[in-house]
Structure formats: C-alpha cells, structure tokens
Length: 607
Ligand SMILES: Nc1ncnc2c1ncn2[C@@H]1O[C@H](COP(=O)(O)OP(=O)(O)OP(=O)(O)O)[C@@H](O)[C@H]1O
Ligand SMILES: [Mg+2]
Image (cartoon, rainbow, N blue to C red; front, top):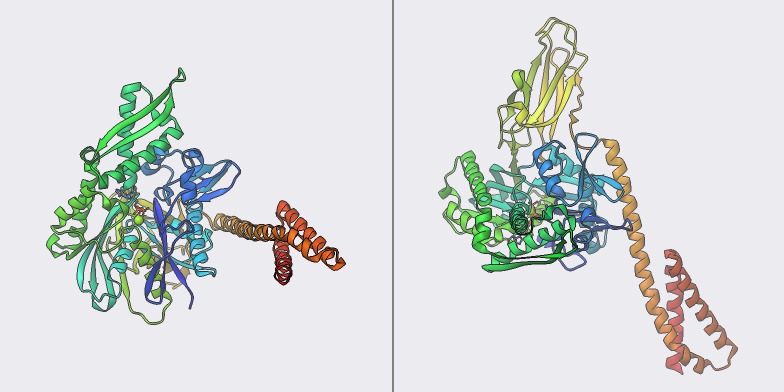
C-alpha cells in the first residue's frame, strides 16, 4: 500500500508524521528533533538552508533568511497583512506580477509558495530518510480560517515540492482526529489552536464509530506567537528610543536579534516569573560607541503587553460557540494546540472562559501532524474506519449590483458542497456576463476576499432575460472552490476558468517544480559524495596504518611489492577523485580500497 505522510506546515515550526500499522509516528529529523523550524535561507555562496541550520544563521544573514512565510502565502500585495509584514520583516518583500508577493533572497526573487515548498521538501526528505523509500503523497494541514487563495497557494507549494497533496485538512480538525483516534468517543469538543502565526477555534462532535463532524470554525490568520513577540519588540524598541534616541528597527541585524530575544523571553516567562533580556553591542552610535540593551521583563508585564491579543482569542471563541449554537457548558472537552498555549495566561483565560480545565493529553507541537498522518492513511485504505466532515470557514458568494455581496454557500456549511445559481442576461443581445467570486463575511463585496473572476462568453443573442445560464459553485473536501456553467436551453456546458487574482500560473508552477527537482538531484548527489568520501577516508586511514606492517610481512617478494604499489596508487586515485568531487569514481574506489584492506588484514593475521 502506498505511504502517505502528514505534514503540519506551521508558521514557525513544521512537523511530519506517518501511520505505521495503527500507530502514529512523528518522524525525527537528522538533528534529533521532532519539529523543524519553517525557516529558509540562502547563504552567500548561494546554498539553500532549511530548518534549524537556517534558523541558527539568521542573525548574521538576516536579509536572506525567511521565517513566517506562511503569513504571506496566498495574500495580495496590497493587503494590510502584507504591509504589516513588510514593516516588521528583516528580509525584502516585493510585488509580484499577479498582485502577489515575492521574496528577494540574494540575487533571486521567489514566490511565497516556492519558499514554503522548500520547507515541504525538507519534510519530505525527513520522511524519506526515515522510510528509506521515496514519498509521493501527502496530506498537508492549513489553518481552518484559511481562504481559498491561501489553500490554493499551499497546494501549489506541495506541487512545487514534488508532492501529490491528496488532501488539505484544517489544523484544528487534524488535532481532533489525533485526539479521538481509536478511542470510540462520543462527545462535543473545542479545539483551541494558538500557534506562531494563526489562531483557530473549531467546535466538533466526535461520534461513536469514528465520525468527526465539525460544527463551526472561525479564527484569525494573523494572530499568533509572532504578534506576542512583536509586542515585546515594540516595548524594547521604544524603551531604547527613549533612552538613546536611536530606532533599532533601522538595523536588520539588531531587529533579528531583538526577535530572537523577545521569543526567548516570552517562552521563559511561561516557566518563570522574571527574566532578563540582554543584548550587548546591539548597535553603535554615530560616534562609533557601542550600545547595549539590557532590560528585565516579568510575567505580569508580558501579560499586560499582550492582554488584548489573548482577549481577541476569547472573542473568537465566543463567536465559534454562537455559530455552533452551543453554550460553554455543552463543550465536554477543550483541546489545546499550538506552542503559544504553553503561556500560563492563555491557559488560564481558556479555562475561565470554558469553565473547565483544558485537556492536556495531546502534544501541542505534534498533534496536528499526527492527525494529518492519520487522515493520509485513511484516504488510501480500503476499509473506512473514520469519517471526517469538515466545514467551509467562509461564506462563498458573488458580487451583485451596488457592490453587494450575495451569499451562495454560507459559512460553516459541511464540505464538499455545491450550489447553483441561474444568471439571466440583462440587455438585448448580450453575449457576455462577468462574474466576481468572493469569500468572506461582509455584506459588502469589497470587504471580502476576491477569489477570481470569470466571464461567461458566447451567449446566444436573444432578447434580455431570455438566456439563462446555470452556474454551479463548488467547494471540495480541501475547501477549494471551483465553478462550472451551463446554458439551460441548449444544455451546452460552458467551460470557465476562474482566473486567480493572485497566485501562480501553471507555467510558473512547472518551472518552479523543475528547479526544485534540480535542487533535489544536486542535494542527493552531494549527500552521496559526502558519504562515500567519509567511507573512503576511513579506509585510507586504516590501510595507511597497515603499510609498515605489510612491508615487513612481504619483505622483498615481487608479489608483495606489487600489491603495495597497487594499494598506494589506489589511495592516490581516491584522493584525487575526492579532490575533483567525482562521486562515481569515489564510490568505485571505495570498493577497491575495501578489497585491499581485506587482503592486508589477511596478510597481517597470517603473518
Ligand atoms: N513555552 C512557551 N511559552 C510561550 N510560547 C511558546 C512556548 N513554546 C513555544 N511558544 C511559541 O509558540 C509559537 C509556535 O507554536 P507552533 O509551533 O504551534 O506554531 P506553528 O504551528 O508554527 O504556527 P501556526 O500553527 O500558527 O502556523 C511560537 O510563537 C513560540 O514562540
Ligand atoms: Mg500550528
């Protein structure tokens, strides 16, 4: 049976899991960690770095290190969130050709899905190293509150990474799956997921026989740990400004150091009540004097600085309950997901709001990936042991007269789903109708997210109102939207393409896929070279260690001298091959050296 991996592509950390038999396994990366930072960098030499290694060099290479790319995925250039990221990021964000966002690293510009694909590719490699075989299929998670553009862009990232993303699932739903998997529960639960970049809350009914039904979901895709860090950074920056009259934000390296220190202090304050932020030589004055930053921060101050952020999550929880038409007392368990739920103020606030202690049985960093792995296995298994019914987080509709938003599929409708709407011509001999597809909760079209537009063309010429076109709007299990149209009189299907207003073209994706493949070939070649080089060097050391003994043993026999000369030249050839980086040659030489060493050992033991 084909293996499907589950990937939690997080704003700060990513995690990969697979179901082995009936046991979910979280796969450890080479460094021994179960999560990998979603950080991508390009070094001065043009080398790509992903994960811990990229995070570790972020301070010295701030301009070419991307973190939190997920905050930008599927967003439009002119959106407020992008403006915010431009202000606070130490890397350069530029406008793309489709009103989209691009990131400049060294001399190249990358689309956001491309950057995310590098993280996905890394997760794929981690899984392949563990399984010892190539992986093709994956289930990837997204915040429940992601709109269609963000989902599409995430799918594109998967495709670029060479993954067939067989399903996109919502992060809180994945967490609930992992929580209820194999337990035959029957209860109503809330999943509160506060991660690095996003906040989601979902209310689910977990029924007997493995039915997981989402009743409502809502959230904020721009509310997470990054915003908590930003509050600490603001506090530090304005304190420094007051004291020294210098704006630390102007210095990218200083900003990156502040970012690290802020996050560290925040995490420490989950365990202790006081901490100190200490950044020597943070910047130098115009007179070349080095300035230091040193400030004490206690838990109470942190809580004050971030109280409104925590309060915002409570408002959203209230909304989720209202949408589900449930009271707090009807929630039988609250599951905490995401690293930010380690903050005591968050735990306390959640407990107060739901009037119960949250469940601590799931691992906040791993549970989403585990759920994705479980869903991945379920999708390829014949026996259906589990049914997942999710909902669409946003209403889907079209723009009508007066820039009004006409809702076709309401928020929290179970997906997959479809609605049809009949359009009629409004003028005589009208041959085309333009339709704008939007997603969102506002009654005003321009306040909602534009997913795309299409034009019904080639309509029959007739008096106004005589031509009726039936348009079907569909949301699939990934939460992704598609549209079809049919002329009701002729029954002729109109094929229409919703042109994404942001996002990548098929050609762009193909190009990015092939460069991702090239990268992989290069990387695997490098790894093969490094491995054979190491093996060769070990063999050479052992052989050279035996030379004196062999010389003694074979004495002046022609045969022995011949063997020694051959061994010396093999060592020579190997060194040359290593120097020239010719991998195949090194691999060949390893075999030769192995034979030589066995022969030497034979001589030594006999002698
Ligand atoms: N002990 C802790 N106390 C407070 N915050 C913490 C702690 N440990 C981790 N965090 C924060 O949790 C966040 C990361 O959480 P997580 O790994 O769940 O996010 P993510 O999955 O990458 O993001 P998202 O789900 O929003 O895309 C970071 O902001 C990190 O600083
Ligand atoms: Mg997460």
